[in-house]
Image (tube, rainbow, N blue to C red; front, side, top):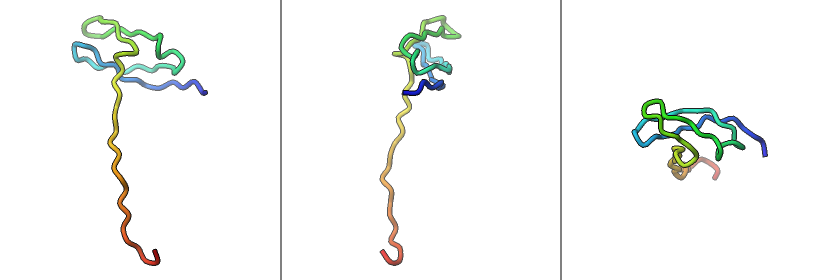
Length: 64
């Protein structure tokens, strides 16, 4: 598996959002400090963006 450098969004308990670049192999071990309240942020504080998937609508076309 390739090791990729991806930007992750961390959310602190105080409501601050921190964006950091993290390697896939180091994601479990990496710790950051919140800029506002100096709380340690780690793997459990990653914000997961859930995208909504909608079914595709097929329109009637000629010769189908």
